[in-house]
Image 1 (cartoon, rainbow, N blue to C red):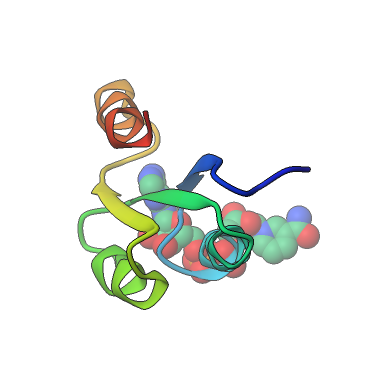
Image 2 (cartoon, protein in one colour; image 1 turned 135 degrees about the vertical axis):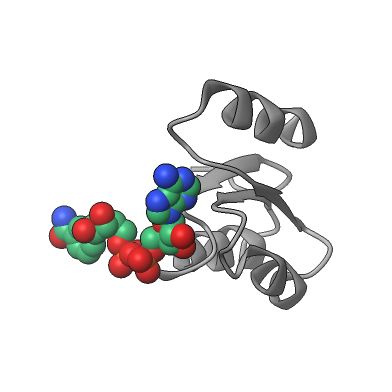
Length: 74
Ligand SMILES: NC(=O)c1ccc[n+]([C@@H]2O[C@H](COP(=O)([O-])OP(=O)(O)OC[C@H]3O[C@@H](n4cnc5c(N)ncnc54)[C@H](O)[C@@H]3O)[C@@H](O)[C@H]2O)c1
């Protein structure tokens, strides 16, 4: 799969499997939007990941929150 310059939306991206996936994507020169709960460590995760990552606080079960996360992804 070609990751370079791709933008991925990673749900639950502030920790665990989601954060690990985000690290791999950024390491492969892709970019990520981390969608995770507002109280999560999403902002800190983005700091670690650098300029290729953005945090979009929200609940993946909310259509409005997912739409809001897709904006920066676009
Ligand atoms: N099938 C398997 O072999 C396997 C193995 C490991 C984990 N899992 C599953 O994968 C999932 C993730 O596991 P993990 O270890 O990364 O867990 P984790 O708790 O480390 O990470 C989950 C992340 O999802 C976020 N989150 C929870 N509810 C959310 C919501 N409604 N909207 C947005 N974000 C939300 C949390 O804030 C957290 O950052 C779990 O459901 C786990 O059971 C499956």
